[in-house]
Length: 187
Image (cartoon, rainbow, N blue to C red):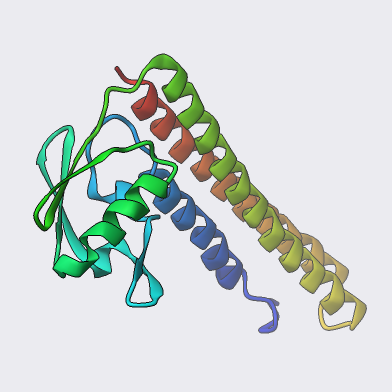
């Protein structure tokens, strides 16, 4: 008999959050192709507060290796340009009126390896997040056992379910990394 106090689906939902966060982080890594998500991590100092790029400009991809940023407010062009320069993306903005063009340079072997290292760092953070969720679930089960809310057999069975879910999400994270690594190293 499963107890209502322990919710495996909630743990799975939290683990899925770590995978989603990883996918978003990896999406912003530069692979040599232009993609609007490349600029997602950039915050622009606009009207006295930091705002995401998407709230001050429209980003489009007119060519495979070019991003075009149309800044809505003419007074924000220099702030957007400054935010791009100060980001760690290594991009050089070229301004023409209210439009900023970003050429995405070819990635050399060393830069590709650096990107793979960053991808591994993001992946390890996601694995740690999943393990934290596992630990929370196992701690909760131990507390239920200690409070005599569940039997030892139920605790062992549910702990095995938590571990199975953890293994499943770690494998999914590894799969996401493998595909991103392949995309980065593709010349």
